[in-house]
Amino acid sequence: IILFLVFFSFSAPSLADDATDFQLEGISLYDSALDHFSERQIKNNLVDWYSSKEYSTTSLRNLPKFKIFNEIQISFKTDDKKYIILSIDGVVFKDINDCLKELDKTSKELNEMFKDAYKSEKYTYPHLGDETGETKITDVFWKFNSGDQITAQCIAYGKEIKNKFGYKDEWRIRLGGEEFGNFLSNKAYK
Picture (cartoon, rainbow, N blue to C red):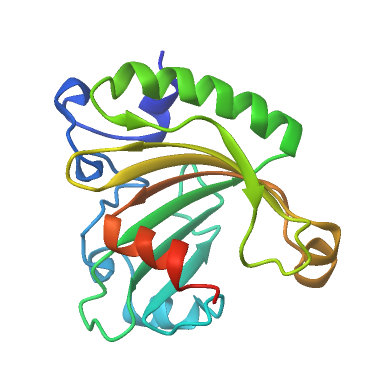
């Protein structure tokens, strides 16, 4: 059984041409977050990670409705009253060595599913949100013609971040639109 039958629900993977064909915990890219969570849940779990306030992210942890992930993060334009999801991340807390093994398996499986998508090489780089440079991200992504992409990644948090915020290393899957991806790369941490 393919690992991602567990993580994604989809109707026809061979026909997948963008990230909207997939769901994390029953949630799809470009859904309204209000279809899945109350406005109170969204507002009460906002995080303050970005220097730019153009977009917001809410981090929902350990909800009874989550069957697979420890945490779901959804991102949307800050002034959007419908909370249209421009990025959704599913997070599982996992030792970094186990995560890297999982990332290799995940990459092989997704390569089979997304033969027509652009695939990046596995790459490790410092997390832009950690000024110490200790936190490292290792990821692989598949980009569709629509500009949407699916990213599989491991995050190894640095000692200072772990001590300050209690973060744990993690394995994550991101369904993301091009718009929010550009924000993360170019504006979020400047």
